[in-house]
Length: 170
Length: 417
Image (tube, each protein chain N blue to C red):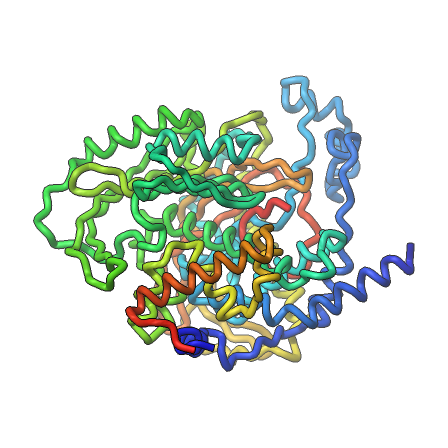
């Protein structure tokens, strides 16, 4: 039992060291504004779940699995924030909640193109372009085949290029 | 790599910002020390938190507890999955519920206006739809997401149904389930600007009637109150890049009530000038069990707020004394400096009310538990005054067991894993 616990801890430690930066970047690309301490909190929330479900983490898809957990952590964080803002509306005037794209993307053309995509396409596009997931990893994250993920990514990229008003290069 | 891909990658918000956790080894140690044990039925029904002051009290016996409650039913311990008491100060109300920026330490005191008597308020175990896909289809039908062909996608936590007219229903089952309806692409954000257009919008009474009709059909059993109406303008961009004429929308946000007590859940509806619903969202739950857990007094709740502050800062100061980058305190009225800790802000809590907030227990059940909503005035470092809100669990602490979340990271809402 002691040896198994040690192996679990070793694996968890490796997962944290290898993938926590990618998990953190996934979170902070999608939730603004975010202080360093808030980001650390969300990362720790995610890793706590990873530790509890360590046996479920697939050996061949560790990062997409962890990003899947972060996705749900993010969902709850957004929901808590929105609930709090709505609940305190009578005390504090509601303010705009800019998305990450509105907050940091100075290229307005790209921002408008991204905002015109549907949510699924946008997430697929950014998971590939910003979070670096390939089609195999996208398939693992969405529980679809690699081919299906490739088709969805291709469709999202095509729609994005159409919205930008150009044709594909290269 | 295509030009578009390069252009997109060049705009990565995280580019050039490598992530460094302030105490990675410490975090790994904290996490791996936690062992989640499956609760046994005996533990769940009869274990009591043995506060030292109660050690010799007759209240330790099951029979005495039953006599105290008068109903003949022993209330099981509320083992909260995370410290989501919401006790973190909300001087900046836009911070997450429970997330605390470790920058100032708050000392709370109770003004004489705080309610001296303990109110009564029940606690509610919630029930959620058991079949995510079926519930998504049911709600989709209510909102008219029915025009073939339907596109259905999702995973174990999320189902999205879109019809050929562009109507969409998204149902999320993580934590407390939520439904989201929209008539336009979900990527088009709700209105963000105050409108000065002359569009004749549906009356508030009309909108309230719409909402009432939908809630009756949804049949979750909760009620709503405290409608907050806003009129605003949204400008959409077509797929060909042209900007459409601005459209006026009317939004109403309600607070979900259970037994007349406000919860932390909103219901939102938006309609256009034609009174077509273009966005709606809300929770999907009903009440399963009502329990009458005794409450602590509002005064005792203030003491609990202070105790949490002390526990957070005593834990964080030992863990982060070598990494803290907070500047020394600026002294001002009501703010005292500390050479070794964060500045201390004195807060006088002058009013309290009871509301219900969502909690998840270690056994996976979700509850609406009564919390005290305190309003108080604090003096900032520059001498200005701020009025803010704080929340503290109102259930008698003898009936509550917190999970061993010693990270001090606060709460981000229930996470159902």
